[in-house]
Length: 149
Image (cartoon, rainbow, N blue to C red; front, side):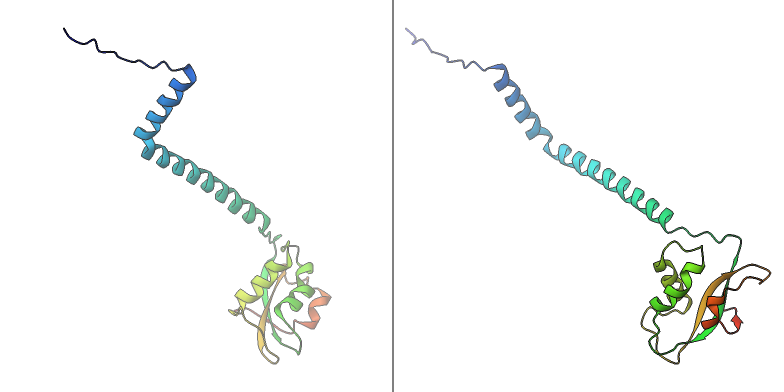
């Protein structure tokens, strides 16, 4: 006579069955899920970076208003800085929406991002009408003779 084997079956609730299926799915596809999440986060970061770059480009865009960029030589006086020169001149140029744009142009024009020193000759960029008729009175402090680099 054989002993009767008793098989115990466990009954699961629907919530427990779903949890078991989800756990089994996660264990089988963990690598794919992680890669997918990384890919989606990369896409989101790329879109945010592109939008930020576009916003900065629009914010810093300059319009030349049909005027041409010219240069004048200026001998640096005691106490002058790129910032102090830019404070005097950037407001006269509607091409610049922010003083930092003009400071950056001054530094690039003179190939110097450091301090300027007394007696040093630098180029002052400014915009003027192509026929040269409009040079502002405020430039008189800085502009002596015009020079093209």
